[in-house]
Length: 393
Image 1 (tube, one colour):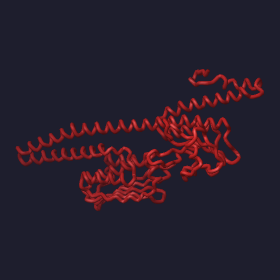
Image 2 (cartoon, helix red, strand yellow):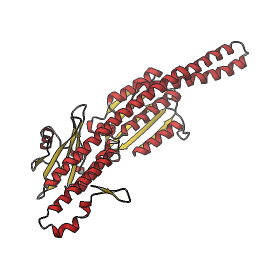
Image 3 (tube, helix red, strand yellow):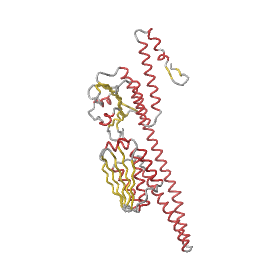
Image 4 (cartoon, helix red, strand yellow):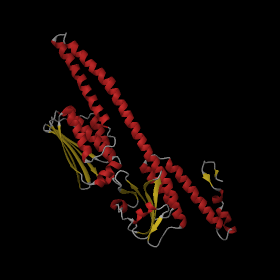
């Protein structure tokens, strides 16, 4: 039975005593049993630590770290399947494997999906330096999430214990990944419900109250002299502006775009929302044609930050620029994502920073991007440049 020491760490007496029994166990049976118990303990600890995280990326990282403790492979590789379109992506492994993503429907590694036990192959390994590999599917609740692999360089291969260890790692990793994905769906549902609640409150209470105040101000202005009427109308204009801002916020809340991306349809939707609200024409030039880049930006959250920066830039145009036309230009060049928001408005002093611009600069710094603002009498250009090596593993 396991016991607990003063630090709370669990230990197995047989493992702790294995050195003392070596001389009395010439055939090595107790030594083998001790190693098996030690492996079991490692897998139990792994299951606990993996399931404590609810972030999928962190789960994969921890899974690889734990796999290295029980498998002496030269490379640990994790690949996940996109449940939407069935595509595969390598999310952990040597840099050249991640960069080339060698998975296709004929990949020998994918044969593990049709087996309950791990498969081995010395032909068609994912890592070009490997000569032998063991692959086992990640399954949870009857669904394939991906697979984990251990690959060894020429002249090396997995032991029986390591093949079994890969099975244990796969079970723990699949369970933790499934939990993380369930949590993500629950978090999204909670966020969606909260956005709906806030939208209702803004519409029913705040917006309605402000509209009533506006009507009362209109009534007051009819019974006063010209000077007083001008003062009341200035207040009335501020109330109207506030109502417009609330309507913009309601539009964004109800659009439910927390999973914001930089694909052409998402950017066009953002542009169309502004046109519907303000009448300002927005032209979209979308020239990022790499699906892998778009997928990675969406996966690591970078796309959300850029999307929010674009939205803030468009809101600034709508509120302040008095522009008639905006051009949204997205391109990919020299391993860099370029986003330019250019308007033909009246311009402003970029040094007079409000909360919106400060927030854009903070978002840019957070993702490793640069933010340039060039403004003058002919309009304003906001440029976001993101080096891909800053955002991609």
